[in-house]
Image (cartoon, rainbow, N blue to C red):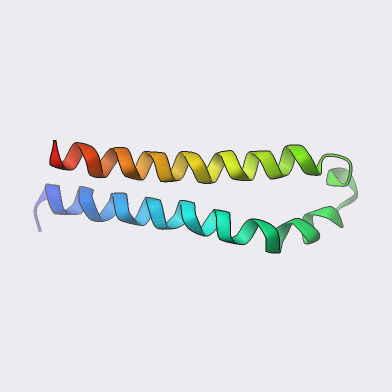
Length: 69
């Protein structure tokens, strides 16, 4: 495999990880709510998870776009 193929597949993996973060947020948030420290900060924790997922999808998309540029 050459470097172009590796970068392309790595971009796909990053996008899939980002989408899986979006998928897992509703399942994980009830468990996070049981932690006393995060009970009052659920909005911030949820926002951070969504930002993390968005950045992962964006990074993977940029990597794939640069691969074909």
